[in-house]
Image (cartoon, rainbow, N blue to C red; front, side, top):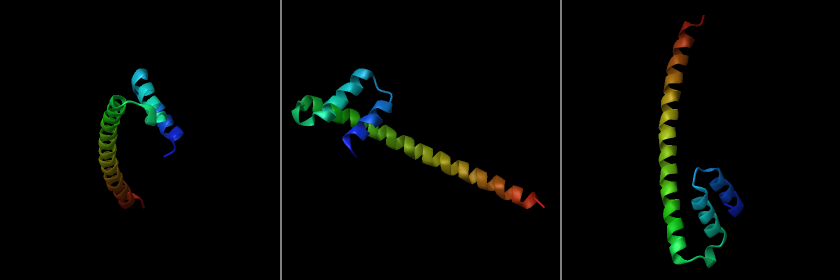
Length: 82
């Protein structure tokens, strides 16, 4: 993914401004950053990745349940319509 696109996505997230700015700065200047900055940013990104992955899993399960309910109701409506 292009760097500016990644940064746009970060800007949409709910992070403290300081944390968000630090990660963006690290991403933009990765070669010049200290090991400490790289490790902290990596750890923050890993946590965010895992949270996002779990949200996607939860939303997928919810969507599947909604679809099953919709299909059940729609099937019953189809039986009743003359």
